Image (cartoon, rainbow, N blue to C red):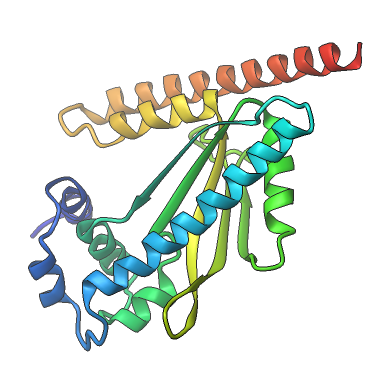
Length: 231
């Protein structure tokens, strides 16, 4: 009998080896929307949200301020990642349930220079009247136990198609450069399979210390910026 850890590992491997579109379609029942059309909705949502942040970045520049955004990245979840989420969260295998219950098929990461930039950008973004906030998780003021820090927004944005307006959900993550650097490396190390548990625990402690040090760098850089701007 496979252990629960073995099952989780095999589900995770779906994100690495990935599933083909045909394999995914076989796993989804009552598929009323062609997959190409389904994913186009999410690509359009990403374009809408990216444009909003790029416009805000330009506006700050026009106001004589430095651009708060260092870079923006986006992605659509792979077939394997979606299927893993269906399995681990016991989501019904149909497109309607996937749209309803999975909020991060479209993901946008906005990397900022300073912590205050994150909250200012998020506030400006959420004040726009066509953005609906579904959920907000502040992992900067309330980090995860492993040290992860970021501001997560689940939002719905309208996309305008030929014959309809459609609300599409997306996850926006706002981080500083230091937070993004730590999260990227932690993600690469998280699923190393060949280490004994005691060594994995030691590495987890080291990663937590690195996260705390990164947060201290962010705090000090913000303090320096505040002093410079006050003079």
